[in-house]
Length: 140
Image 1: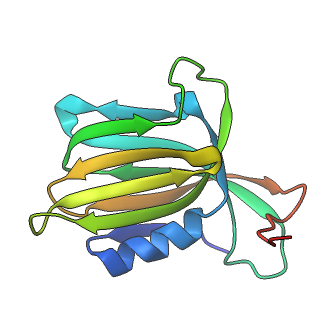
Image 2: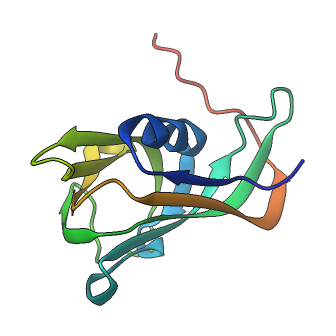
């Protein structure tokens, strides 16, 4: 199967990227805001949901362009080795076409990106391996 390479330019596209990144795991230190380039970048180990029966994780890069500012909530940037799980990527429209992209993490963590518009890319890297388990969201 070929590697994913997706681009989001509107809210519907961003929902596709969000579903592909659901349950991606990453270290806090693998997120970077490049203010001079107006870019926010995450390197994640995403669960490959599009492979129905396979349990696979793949190294991927998710980045957002035209980012004017970043707010971190509930995540300690001083602990770069702590692992967290990305649950969703949401968009709240502001003054069109801008707004806020929110990266929602397990444990009530979030990162809010103030963006001029939606411009995101998700690209898989060659590294892939068998996942130990399938993420489970059953509520007891």
